[in-house]
Length: 488
Image 1 (cartoon, rainbow, N blue to C red):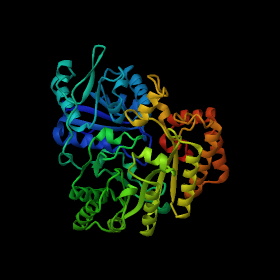
Image 2 (cartoon, rainbow, N blue to C red):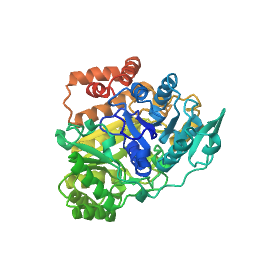
Image 3 (cartoon, rainbow, N blue to C red):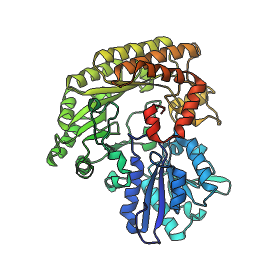
Image 4 (cartoon, rainbow, N blue to C red):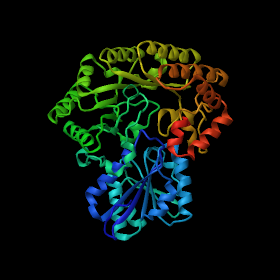
């Protein structure tokens, strides 16, 4: 339901197009909360969520004044199709935001009216205030707003970049904007050994100081900024009190970037009497893991540590992570985390630029080593290019990417277009070794799935025609069905 408010309020529909029941659209919640803080009863906001409804039908029913859509690269084509369909029935301005358009502005389509580049809170506030005043988006006024793109007849206009916000200005995101089903007890992958949890996600920082060649996060957020430890504790308390949350996934990579930062969070949580009331999953950087850091994290309530291991080949790993981590550091991080009782999960990539069969064989060997050390979940994907990354630059330089590149194919789980596969390796050889990696992953993960079911799914997965049909079906099914069928 739209929030009840006066009839003159601007009606805004924020649309989540990412199908993932385990990852609520927190960035949209940040936007909604920020707008509500500043505009109060002058705005009505509804998050339209593809995980629970047909976005097109819901938008048509709500008849909003403005539609906002956030899109990653993998969902950009879907976003265009959705807006094309919407525009056939409603003359409503559509604002696009998210990582994709921020890193690939040249892909800005005329189906969208405005694009927000980079951090969106202050920019969309100014856009709503303009619409509130003029009930339209006049070009001469749009030119005064930083951090956007828009169409002036057939010309795409970019305004100057917007400065980053001080995170003190951003309120704790109000999860009442989310569908309550996100907080239903559920058994999720690798969550506390299969027990039901009430889960929530948090961001305790924005940005990244590292420059991994495959990642666009650092490009989107620019420099790293941290929420105050007291604010982190306040948000944890809010989630426990209001939603009975007992398991929190820290989405950012730097919940515990240093021992001092972890200590600050521990002290803030202790002051709020939160120690022992929630379990936490967080991502760590292997080169920063120490015995002392693990001890502090254990006291905070961390039970699961996730890593981007990426490769078992030092040569490839050094390239992927810009010489910031080694295979031995990955191993040491696993040893320390297991010593302190953490469940460990992680991810790898195959088909990287310049990667040979012997490099991928080393990845298999490392995955096997981790299996013996008790790592509970490993995932292996195919290296794919994302706009503005070093991967993307490599693809353009080597004529692997052009203006007709299909953004749907950047899905790392889609094996049939290994963009960077070395010329010395045939697709058959790549499929064989990738299948071995997936087999190790399946053997490690504690999933209640029969081998017959796995063989059927593998048959579909490695057959391009069947795989494409399955992906097509998955895009058109409710998320709950695709989750059960493992079509995502």
